[in-house]
Length: 223
Image (cartoon, rainbow, N blue to C red; front, side, top):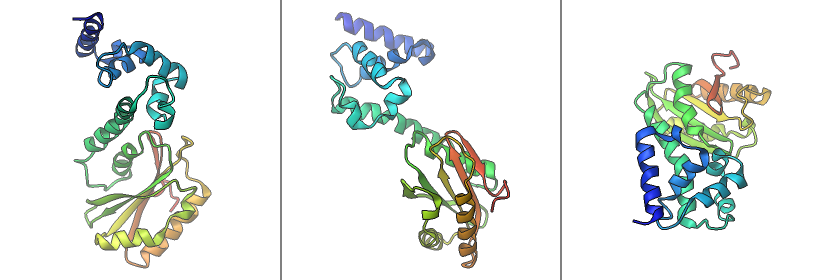
């Protein structure tokens, strides 16, 4: 067993015994990089990543092309780093999957927030519900939308009618980190509600998400 092998074994045992709380951020990356660099000392590269991007969070959120600019980073390592936030997001979504009856703003918000984890773009989702508020589908409608005024009522209506939905919930995120609905959000929501109502479809809520916070426009009296 080489010196590196012994160090790796100690790191893995430390993880299993004490969890990640026992590690500094660069050690977390060092441990992760074991799995894309099986024969290399990953400590210097872990330090280089933290020093370049500034934090563990920034490393995981960095674009792939920016990661590849770091000397020593290959395709396998980029793929591994980008996999981590996606797995975390999928885990959080799956954890809330059992609660698929969204009969309150709290349930709707908790259902939607994980879908925006690590999201850098503004994204709009639609949830179609049956008459008992059970989720029929949750679909991403738009990505990179500048504001909710660009939301297409036609696309919302087409999906709702295709799923035979009794009601829908729409959501979008504020990448600013502030979940407070804007004036444009209010105007667009009322426009969508009126248009869907004419088709016999209820707009139950519009959830605005920012990080792990959310605001229900229905509960806030903004619809």
